[in-house]
Image (cartoon, rainbow, N blue to C red; front, side, top):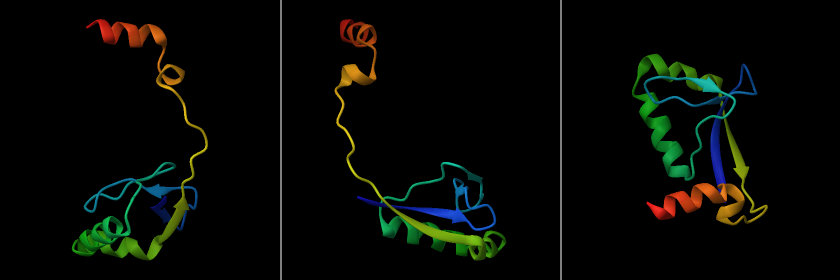
Length: 88
């Protein structure tokens, strides 16, 4: 699966995590699962003249996600919690 993030060129360890009207950057960033979603986001940013100038400082990074390991529910959630939830 291919996903996309918008990287901030001035601080390459950070990615855009905000909205089209509020640009915020952090180490995790926002993930776009489809190129169309990324294009729509950028188009929305371009409609806001104050935010549109930030686009010069962006790179689009493409990531490929691969299945590493498949876990069972009990490997992620404590068994006591599963039993508690099933009882209710």
